[in-house]
Length: 623
Ligand code: ADP
Ligand code: MG
Image (cartoon, rainbow, N blue to C red; front, side, top):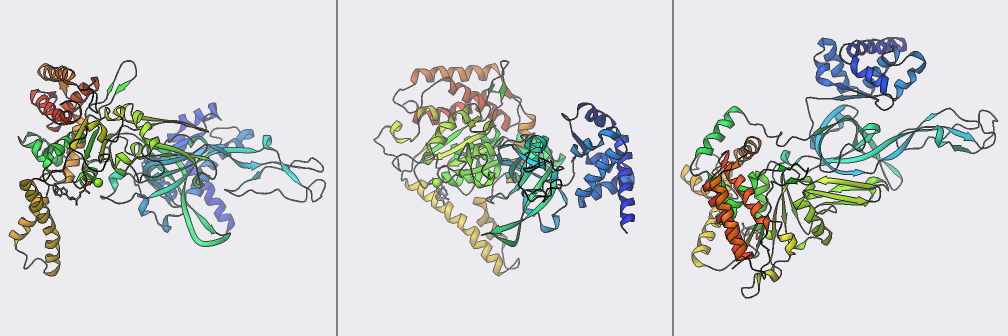
């Protein structure tokens, strides 16, 4: 029985040997030359699948029994002298066999007990990383009595393997000490990934899984990065109050990491979608349609909604010859009385952005809005770097509610995060620059809870001018009683509530007995003209394909408005008029042209943008 097993393994190693010789000659040669600087053989799963029937078999076995397969490949490298000559073949023990390019990804929330010890591929955003630290893999001990050294003793994961006693030489029960210089270590790091927001249906909390990375995989991923982790799902027994529990935790033993960088790769646009998108772009009511499709259950606020549709499209990031860059993302702030649907609109926007994160300034996680370095149990005493909302929203939108209540540290870190779109951290063993290339949509209440008609605006917005000036648009929203408007909002709200009634109605009397007029009437006020699926695809399409440039006429118009503005600027107002406003005008112009898929920023864009910007600045920058 045991013999048969033996033959099988060699057989498999032979299969692997033939596969490697055919497809990985060059890579193996490189490892042979550059070992130990290069010591990972990266095998593309897709190549394996294309390697005939044998390849399919091997690929399938990898998924089911990865531990054995990795040893088979190592045997193939070792026994057939693929890289090293006989006398140095033990070097093969230190080669990492890695696989990439798995076609099927499993969502974090769908990982189950059946997956334990199988090979899986998981996509997500890096939320936390620990410092990189060495872990003992082979320990050599010295007898304190006679000085004899033990052979290297393999160390398991987590627990420390003590040497054999008594000492083989002097046969005494003595103390043994570890000899670090003869022992072997590997770099290790723990990271936590969380599901990408685009996979979540509105409002769901993202789930996370921890990953152990070792050797040349450490320090590849930073918080906020979108990555694919391929590896073996492992289980580890929980211990509570020193007792072993029957509950297990799971983690992934990383085998390879693939960096996912491309923007919007998650949004698939079919030919049919493209047709619908292009057609919609030609609709002469396209601006109104987009605006009205944002939070349709909220009445009015047309200008705010129009502005939100522009920030969803965004301007264009520009790399300057000196290496610096100008952001394309548009930041927008809503400051207003309570109860006027600020939070509602923020939450809705997240549904429309292919990458959106909603958070509140006061209830943010420990990582806050930007990032933090802490020593917590996640890192077992190591420092951990954790991404905050603006990092997790990289390449998307961060909706930050209750911004006036955010922590002081966040406030100062926001300056860099908003303008340079990066966050620098230097603390203990961790120095990192994280990316925060996102648009910020903030909401805040006035300092005293409500606006006071008679107090100066500068005293009522609870944010320093330096921070305010980083917003391209600031909407001051006042809640003033107005009978006609109040009635309209009231009717709208009551209509929205009828949707609930309708659902109840259908529950009681399914299909039959529901008259279509009733459905129409009830659903009309809250059904968006552009449904969220198409909305998201449209944005992704525009951002991928559309990079409009300024026409001379539009340029002239924006310049004219800007110069005029400089003349009007009022020092007693909370927002200074600076060159930033000109940049904001350009970004908004780009977004406006993008919205109708135009390659040129025309006069109509300049007019639209000047109207929106002026509506904002009238309240905060001049009288
Ligand atoms: P805020 O964050 O500005 O304090 P909320 O977003 O929490 O306000 O809104 C309070 C409630 O009032 C919500 O249920 C919202 O739907 C409703 N509401 C406020 N203004 C409107 C409006 N214009 N149309 C419809 N509903 C509204
Ligand atoms: Mg609110």
